[in-house]
Length: 42
Image (cartoon, rainbow, N blue to C red; front, top):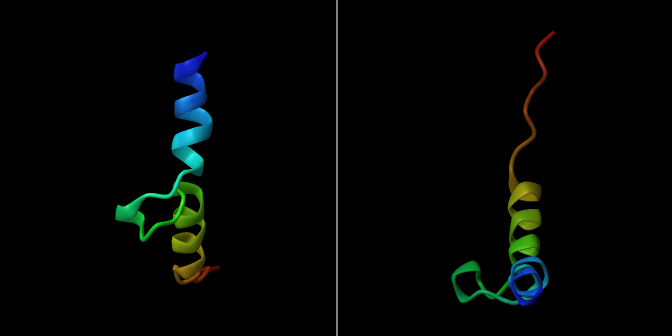
């Protein structure tokens, strides 16, 4: 139970200094939003 809490909740919510003090989910979201959209080719 403790392992699950740490891996699922704590590590995904806590701020990481290597991620510019963002949570991993926030960092990923920001990174995805900063990527250019792919051009669709017909």
